[in-house]
Length: 239
Image (cartoon, rainbow, N blue to C red):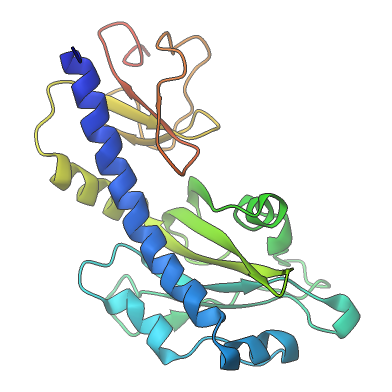
């Protein structure tokens, strides 16, 4: 027989997985747009890849993403530099804006996205990945989760597609799905950083202290490098 704690872990785990898959569903739509014949021409020529319909996904009913797009793998031998097509919702409710970080290698503010975890992990593993929570200092200044997956065309890695979700939007949506819970929980990423917490002393973005996790591996969330713990009196609540 499943214990009450086990049932709660399963319920929260399923809700987290559903939210993650909802965002990856948006990412899959961007991926499909990249693979259209006209879009593939843009990948090889340095031209525009994504059309207006893709950016309008940000206005879809129930959309969780606040940003989305394509980040292209550079091809120096073909004189195709770093470039991206990424749009963000304006926090003030204005029109969508294109993200334009400094991609000039000679600049002091140069942003080499090929070294970022959200780009490098899908490139190396061929699998989707989730990064965060983190402050997007090179773009929006928001506190974000970024979900990405690799794009492979004719056997060649050509970049990643992805979506940004604000931590606040992720939290509000998930807690609304769950309703009341008998025990607080903590959701951790693979760095033991708190992704989401209903435990008062475990703030989102904080690192879990060493030795504060007697529950072992916790319950993993399918498809992402996260694990979930219900919190007892002397476990993750401890300062």
